[in-house]
Image (cartoon, rainbow over all chains, first blue to last red; front, side):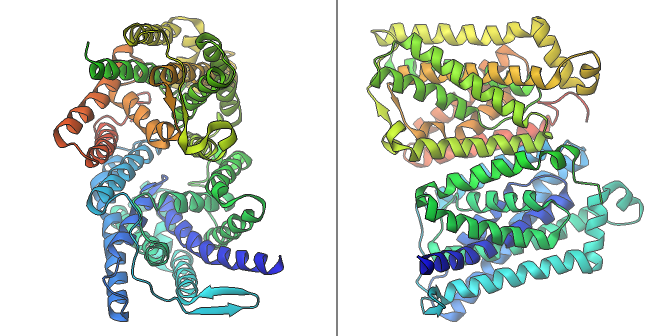
Length: 291
Length: 281
């Protein structure tokens, strides 16, 4: 029993770090852009499909990762410039671009299904060497995924908290109008945030494509887990997004002890619903602009 | 009349009723939801289970479905109605996925992915069933429209335009919103009940989140607070993809439908960002 728990916790740490990275990516877009972007799910899927390597050689893998990251970052930028910048210019309420982002997700999901087929596309087998950590086991690929996702997310949190770019983003999050008055080029800063968030979202996506294959709606469930993480800790605590993501990943895995695996998805959404209702007070008052 | 045309007309009637019911929630109460397919599913499954396992009549099943979904809608609005717009949308999104998960995984109740077949037809012949279905849907649309003329409708419009002002006039805002959600969910369940008895088969595949997005797209395309808009939105979003399916054919057609629904959302919102809200842009 204890070895099962250890294995589930380890699996949870791997999926949780990926969830944490996605949560940081999502939260950057939310704070800087000012609305919930479901397109993070599309960026994730685009990254995963673009990162599919032709062969399992190290060069091919690296090229595939670079391709996945570039495509995802570019997709984030294109969505911003083609769709969301227009809403921002017209000062639409946050619900409008949020609904439009649902439309974008539907478009991307179906375009991917037409281009690559609706089924699962598996990648060449890589990183299958197994390592033991106590009574639990981990493949080399998953260990690399955990370290890379965690490292990239920490780097982004650092950018947000300790650099001039982060200060600019926080100024825009507090008040885009005041930021513009102070000479900040708001649209350019938002585009840069999209590039960074797209890059960060692509990293767990590339590993997910290698580990378990790609499907057009593959970004939806990780995104909802990421939103749950951000909502659980609030939008003001960058390090908390990563930690909450890890916590959700572990909780999701440990829940398998109580529920069967087929209920896992439903469990995440029920948890999400409960989080939203539990944090009602904060959400009613609103978080954005309170810095 | 050709069976295909009859089926398309019936689907348009069902989706027009669904659009009118979501319009009541989004257009009047200002609560934009993406879980309408969940209420639709509650109606369809309640009717299907009661009629196939317990031999209930169509009317009895529809009544229970209406009450069950109405209670669910009331609870959701009471619990989440005070959240900011985008958080309410997120709650409804999660609720939609939880409902789909329950339908797919609670096999003892719903028979999972296999669905429930042999649901009794609405009336003995397909033609009469279609007429009854179109008539019931039409009644639902006009009932929703008629609500605007009642004090309840005025209260809803006042709340949508300015909640604080409505509250200052003595309107119990959370209660009125919850009642609107209850009526809207009940109507969606009634449409679900009609759907189950028309198709004679229900499965989780028919009530996934993409259906909720489709219904919302119909509302956005048709515009708020209009019966003709509900019909226009539903007919456009059902007929154009059908034409595309006939032209293109094959499995790609379903994906083209999805792309079309997504484009409708993005383009309509880009051109008319205030379509679901009062003109405050």
